[in-house]
Length: 420
Image 1 (cartoon, rainbow, N blue to C red):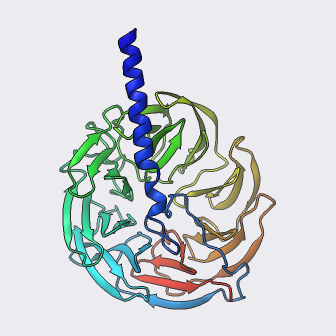
Image 2 (image 1 turned 180 degrees about the vertical axis):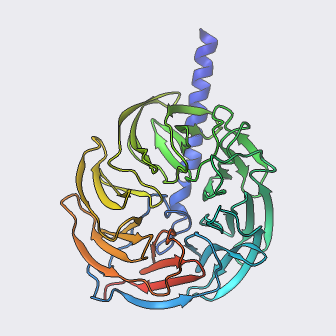
Image 3 (image 1 turned 60 degrees about the horizontal axis):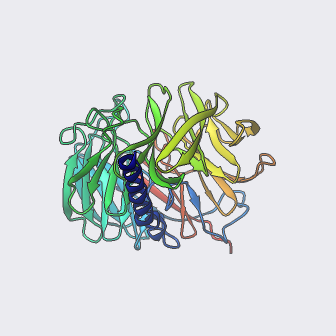
């Protein structure tokens, strides 16, 4: 009995110490006007910027500049240190690309092969910036670390061939890796462990999540503080889990996804919310207990929020998302009750800044500016995207530094949305 007590006490000290070590890392990487990774500094797709246009003119906001030469693919942008980063296919390979703040290309570093995607070729990862390093993942599992200033390669690995990874289906790797403390956390999937923690300086494997061996899906990881435990929220086609900073499984709930599980989880306090398309819908999971003894149970499941590509945003006590077949929906987090819904610009992706939702249609590329409120659908303008490609407009809109960024294959459009 005494030895068990000592082991539990030691485990508590480890988790507490890990929480202190990791908890402050992400916000420090999101300076004012920066968007250093997928869905922003906290991976919640919510900007802290203010002073933006509350209403758009009839033809939408002013186009500040247009950048070209990005190649094919569905990556959006990250912004840090006065540079813009994205990924794209050129003729000879998939590349990480750096631009200046006017859209001029600074450098491009080859990551791996081009193509793939079963009819939807190109990389989908949004590069992750951490100080003087940037990390990108190609569609074939090539994970590369390069210098932000020059694009010079620092290290590389491959989630499939080197880490024994396995995807749930055949469209290729799509996640955006997470830097947390000294580690780069990614999801190769497979029998060696769904998650892998790598030394961010060298790419050396630190641990694998041996208690979780699901195949990887297309969703990215989210760091969370629940029950006093710093952890990573993992959505796969078979489950939702919390994985600790040592690779241990803290909690687990079975959840069956279909075909392609894509949206990033969101959470508040003790509630984790996930959703996916192909008719599956959404689930809310309550996680309770202490860091050493967490348990999870499903609160509800419904098909009123079944999001395919566009992600969801949690604001206050409500979740917003474009539910299949393309209806912008506001739902109560705790109950799963639909508060309002509207067709808006149709099926698409979301970001949020200064009290407004930016919904980008994956079909037309049109963007609606919508008030972020549970009181009802209140639209404040639309932007009809020029230079529209024939591909789906899957790259999420990004708001940073008073600008709205829209990536469409080879083209990046930058709009001035600062209030005059």
